[in-house]
Amino acid sequence: MSGKLYLVATPIGNLEDITLRALKVLKEVDLIAAEDTRHTLGLLNHFEISKPLISYYKQTEKKKSPILIQKLLDGKNIALVSDAGTPGISDPGEEIIKEAIESEIEIIPIPGCVAFVNALICSGFNTKEFMFLGFLSANNKDKKDKLNEIKYETKTLIFYEAPHKMKNTLEVMLEILGDREIVLARELTKIHEEFIRAKISTTLEQIVDYKGEFVIIVQGSNKSKDSYEIEKLNKLSLEEHYEFYQKSGLSKKEIIKKIAKDRKVDKNTIYQYFLEK
Ligand code: SAM
Image (cartoon, rainbow, N blue to C red; front, top):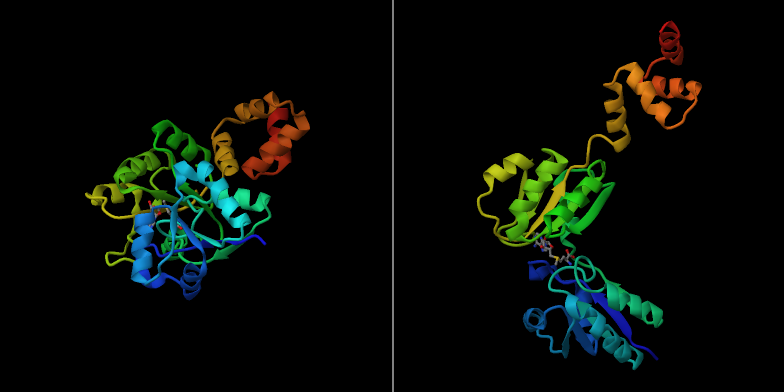
């Protein structure tokens, strides 16, 4: 019978955040696949757990997954852990999980810390609807493209970022998203845990040293793409507004209806205007 693949969440700073179930699973499995074996060894030593470790990180996911799958098929139980938080969330995991599903291996999540969830719940922004984007590309063009793509997203936006890229990322956010309210959740669950709540520009002025780990929470756009475009159309003359819809091949009747809707006026008023013209 195949073994089980446990996806075990570990603390994101404070070791007391490990769950009883995580400790039990780490004690009972045959093998622990870890993003950084030395880092995980520190955690295991702290809880007096001794287990064989195998390294499993981003660059080796493709190569190591079949090896781990074979061990699972041979009946070994394996726990996958990352350096911090939940495996697979901006961390290795996707590859082995896909292959385990194909090989009909049972996958069991062992819930625990996820940095962004804790940052989001303390943000004071909309927690009903949010978009997690993980790390933006280190390439400035790709970074800008992604931010342009989500510029009109009204949901709360959540990003991870490395400390040495924070300043650049906030500058690019200011340029593309405008001066929005943000919350920087710094060093969550650690001694110097801090929430910095301000506009992007103020944050950039105030923070001199981006030390520690950060989650960036950005307030969603207060205008959807549609309302932004309607606002732009409403600034045009009625003739220009008419031409805009004419280009998309609408009939006269449809155009008048659309203009009236955009401008929140009665369609007869628009009709009358063009009749008089
Ligand atoms: N798998 C992890 C999780 O479940 O949250 C995320 C791993 S990702 C490689 C690391 C990023 O998560 C950091 O660059 C930072 O953006 C965020 N992060 C992790 N721990 C954090 C902490 N204690 N405080 C703030 N951000 C943290």
